[in-house]
Length: 327
Image 1 (cartoon, rainbow, N blue to C red):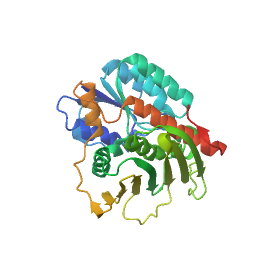
Image 2 (cartoon, helix red, strand yellow):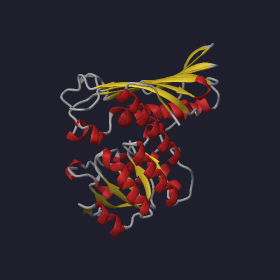
Image 3 (cartoon, helix red, strand yellow):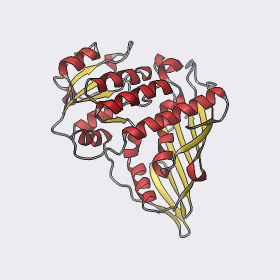
Image 4 (cartoon, rainbow, N blue to C red):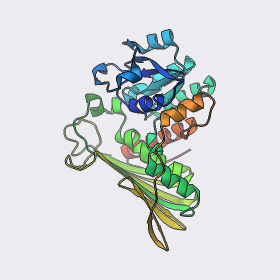
């Protein structure tokens, strides 16, 4: 399949790794998607993009090359608009999160997607890491019974971010940006729907990053009286051994599952067991196979829309300092 890259800001590595494992697919063109994006930031291996022309105008690339799949990974405020344009041209879309920055924009994307007959997935690639795959498979097999409580953490080093991260209008907020991963875990592991959220966020101690929120917290009530919390911070020390620290704690009626330090621990009456990890998978390869009619991607379009909505409603709650309920 012919794949076009629009943007050099998001997780294009997902695309490069996935396409490297599919002999029937190739990258046919690359274009910036946002004003101010620097093509010099590209870190793709030459073999993955060999011979692919570089365009200054992504619309020209879409019209001339007519790719089967478009990967959208530019500044976040352009994700929704470009996704719509690609779907309207008959492309499958693999898009960086957040998929949209407002509920209205998200609804426009959903409407165009429904009429397109194409496939779409947001880049919730953490589902494919060995520790999350292992924990998810174990939970689905009943290892901890019915989930009653969940606590998710995303902690990062801030470093020096690009200018677009310093404005809410272009980066969208920390909860939709990286909080969406943790929010995705809540729905993916439990299968429950969101009922309400109460959230808070703060720009304090963001190292002169303008409007970027360095800390955020969201409390969710889900169906069947399941409760969950999400914390996000960009206060991880510069000298910490890893860039990020993802954690997830799942409390069930028959045990507790914890993901920490890229390991999975199961606590039951018999003690604590560290689970052997499943091999990693590739999200874009999964999406490619679905686009070719050879399977179903772990990340569905409906889940992509739903998690985006949940993250946006959490941001709304934090902005308005009130509980926000879900329709």
